[in-house]
Image 1: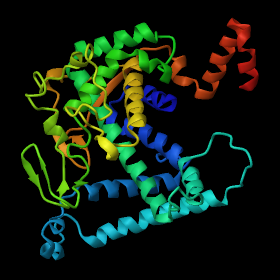
Image 2 (image 1 turned 135 degrees about the vertical axis):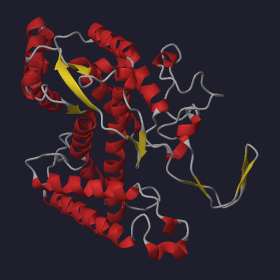
Image 3 (image 1 turned 60 degrees about the vertical axis):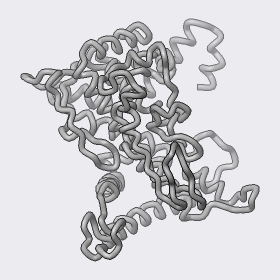
Length: 383
């Protein structure tokens, strides 16, 4: 985040494509956690290759293929051919195999320093049988990694982009979010993760954004059991694919007052948890197949949005009015804005906060704690 804010600071005279910048942040967070690499790095040819590969994957995944529903029309290739899919699959497979080989070739250490990436943890599970005697296979590991990377980047990016769009359209709400952060964080430091639990109105904004703009409008397909079911009077045949229209549920006038209105205040006094227990709003799904990374996704969304709003004043290009901002949707794997969100960012914090590195900032914070209280001496030497 420090690098991202510094990049926006340097571009303050030009319009910022909000979605692109957030995508760099979320992709690099996921990349560092899973593969210990930055997925967006202009100085890394492998990262550039991966970005192109990910773009192809998301583009193909978003298509409606007629052959999936009418098999005898498969040869037409409408919506994408199988050869194209196999090509992307092969390139993805080669990339993941290469990363797994790199992981295996790393020097083994006897002590766990707490810096293992997700791939290392999966490899440990591969060689440790569960209670049922089964182990993870290479295909399991590659599938899990692909799910982590594809599901954890685009969805969080689009949510932050929609939240920024709504705050731009409603300047009085932007002011409420910023006033809360100025009271909790101040203007002499950047937003940190430990600030987030105290930012109740920011949390309400994120919840309302996920209600009105769920990243995946149709949840991933669920399969019904082998026997038929009757749910609320509807007969569900056995072995059916069931798709839940989260977008429609979150806009149901029977469940929400003024459902098409962006109103975070509805969640201030009556906060709704996004853990799948309130079926009116389930952007991460519910039950056993609920998104396993929803805590991480929610954290990234809140942290990115808080950092953007706190660090900059955002404005539309000259001549554009907030109420005229185009909010048209474009469906891909997740709901994208049809028109890119380009905004001008004006710094509102001391310049030092945009320029210093994360490492130097850590020294400053720890050293100031050391001076203020002798009880921090142990922390200083550990650091």
